[in-house]
Image (cartoon, rainbow, N blue to C red; front, top):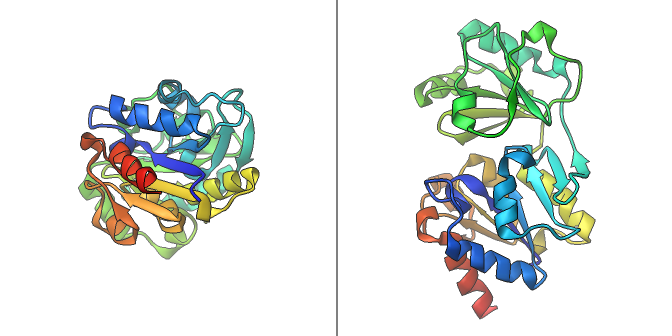
Length: 268
């Protein structure tokens, strides 16, 4: 039985102009009111997507959001942290040295703000993210010794293609690496992805992946699409995501989430 619906945002629940359509909103609100958990899954912090949480009415005492691509599971009402996993500053040294050698930019995120590494090439991550987060340019050697959620190389697609192609094993094997967008390459703690965070949340509810339906479109959604009982790829999803999905729905600009939910729950 499906008890939880997990939703990627960009190019999945959100239209191309970064909005939740009224059709998607109405369907998700209806299912949420029926007791099905609706969980937004994002690489961003909860404050950066708060308008979407409010729009969907996800403010019950036991509503949670998966943030930082699974690195933090947070309760919506009071920002209580149910689950958290990050890395310390030294864990990013191999990545920093690789970026420095190859003249790549680098941004490192804790769980509240972003540190563009100022002794490297300037980054475009702030413009791409377009979110309500504080950016604090800092030299790598001066980074605070605390827990960090992930690092990001943000650059043009051809630059990221080269970064992936030429990446040595000393970097590649040190992180869980995902291409969340054409211009964004993310580096997380090993094994951390949206499915990792969802596993913690499902356990909190006394459920497992047999109770999960997940929607996504990109590489950073692969884990939850593959592990969910019902894994749904958007029509606009990357081909590898469609191949591992149990179902494919219409595009993010054609109310693909609502279209599948209406069909599935009508039959079930």
